[in-house]
Structure formats: structure tokens, C-alpha cells
Image 1 (cartoon, one colour):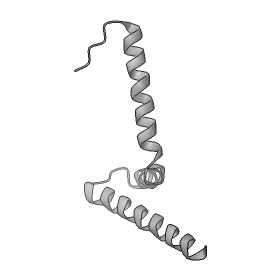
Image 2 (image 1 turned 135 degrees about the vertical axis):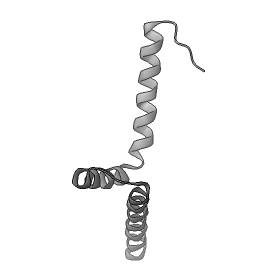
Image 3 (image 1 turned 120 degrees about the horizontal axis):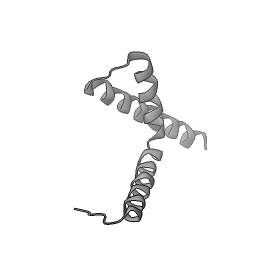
Image 4 (image 1 turned 30 degrees about the vertical axis):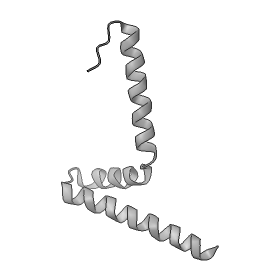
Length: 72
């Protein structure tokens, strides 16, 4: 467990968390965009719908990579 004893320590910890979150999200930007689009239209998604979004984006990404490989 982390205990921050000063305001500066709290600010530093929050800045670190923001950077870590950004790094995690950046590598999954395509999934986030698809998820946000679905959220905007449906307002609520269940686990199965989120899984479908992730699966669909993964399949589209794999297809694009394969098409590029064949093109080269």
C-alpha cells in the first residue's frame, strides 16, 4: 500500500497514474474509439457487447495486417 505524506507526493503519484493510464489506453485506441461510438448510440453496453467490440476490432486489425503483408 502506498501512503503519501505530503501534497507533493500525492501530486507526483497522481501524475504517475495518469501517465500509466495513458500508456495503457494508447495501445488500445482503436478499441476505445469503437467502444465510445457504441456507447454514444446505445448508452449502455453489457459484457457480451463489449467482448464483441473487442473481437471485431481485433479481427479488423488482423485482416488489415494480413492485407498489408500480402500487398508487400
